[in-house]
Image (cartoon, rainbow, N blue to C red; front, side, top):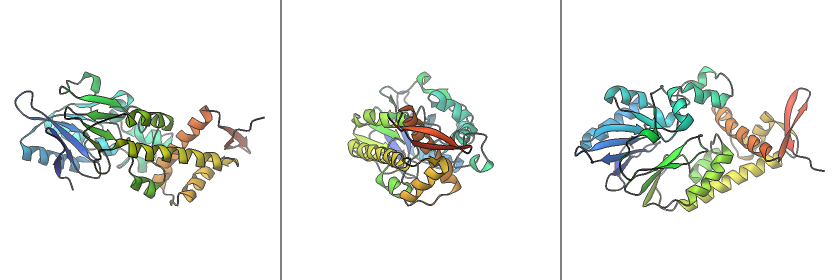
Length: 298
């Protein structure tokens, strides 16, 4: 755990529950480390620094693939220690600078304190737009919207792609049934672009590196379609949101917890928005309770 593994000539990753990348830029003569995501908390930051120092590299900058707490948790500590910039994209920059927004997005209102701590929120850090970064020559930023609104992957000059949270392993679906995506419709579309990617090696944020992206794309695409169909089947009978969530948890053999209610519940709301916008389902109010049902056509 937390071993620094060389994936290509100048591309490394630190193997952990959230894999973190390092690209070593040697343009200036002094090897400079671009850190890709920083894990859950400052303790992880210290492990990153230990690996960097052991290799004789100098921290140059941090790139956050997206705004979720397990990818930005050591940002603030690393910034304080080394005065290095953090880069991300779009609204994810705003969320990284104001991490309570992630909890608000999950809760749909001002969040309870239980959602204002790790693993849901991290310490705020200052962020710049990745478009303004003086990236090493050959870096490519790959938009992968869906898991978060502005998530992206990174291709290093060694032709290694860090895929962030674009793809879940079968283990995730076996354990949780439904993977978290804030914007499911966008995520589903992003899989088409991910499937076209070619690289020497793909390094996901969670799990082991892989060479064949199409197999995992197919697994994730089928998982989205399965959840979508299960929701449509459940809504053949009008159900409130909580009734629908209960049906899905029962179907996938999961036990509801407060955390799962917040995280999976947010994803299910995104499915409802997608299906509603497509005209597949419609809202129904009875006795001041909002129900959802498959759309009745003449």
